[in-house]
Amino acid sequence: MKPSKKIHDIKKTLIEITVIGKDRKGVVAEITNFIFQNHGNIEKINQNVIKGLFGMQLEASFNNIIKEKLDVGLQALAKNLKMEIKVHYQEPNRLTNIAILVTNEDHCILRILESYNKKELKAKIQIIIGNTNILKPIAKKYNIPFYLIDHKDQAEAERQILKLFEEYNIDMVILARYMRILTPNFVWRYPNKIINIHPSLLPAFPGAYAYVQAYERGAKIVGCTAHFVTEDLDQGPIICQKSFNVLESDNIDSIKNKGRKLESSTLLEAIKLALEGKLEVYWGKVHVKKSNLKSK
Image (cartoon, rainbow, N blue to C red; front, side, top):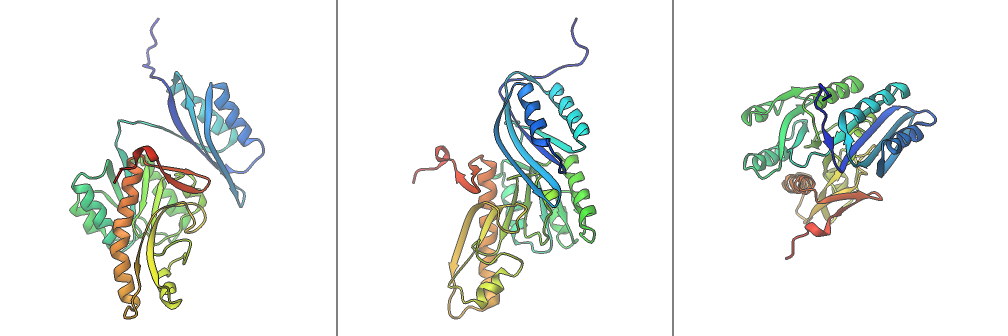
């Protein structure tokens, strides 16, 4: 008898599993045992605990699995553990869905949208989210949905953002001068999928006033860094950096102006590398896949 519901058999499938919830004993063992019992092989695993919040990111490969069966099993496990478990299946033929988060500076998002409009990005920009309405007209110009979510209540704001991410099936998050700090509860759900641009050559001058700090300390070389976001502020794996020399005639305003020109191009470069699958992260460092390097 043929099944009434169509079942999709998937061969050699790589999936990403994210587990978030209150820390408790035995979580790692139960998740990994579930993978083994379903004939999966763990490729990567990372876990963190901060103030009682547990987060785990795991990549596993399977041969000849039934997607629906795996989903049902993981959701049953989530209910038993009283944790949230999210599964992401790699779909090579689908465009990457992007969400862009902004505050009030337009130079980065304009550069991204110009490139996107020229079809230079292998992605679909699904939504733009701002904690102010200042950049809403830009979203309207490019016919991209804009959502205003302020951060007066951090937990509620992040809940609303994550709900939108679910609705639009977001794969990658771009912080285009988004001037808010994201919590571990948010960041752990998108490991190595959130890209930020920071106005300094990290690890130097982290925080909100990087150009001011560089100017006050008399830095001779200043720049910007595109990096993956982690739970540690401005300490995520570095994707790429660009710099410029500071002249004796420069002041804080001229340094900021020079920096902004580099920020947009550096962020766009990082996005393209990520979308083209050229980046690998291990031991806290970003590596560009050698097989994809272009010969000069």
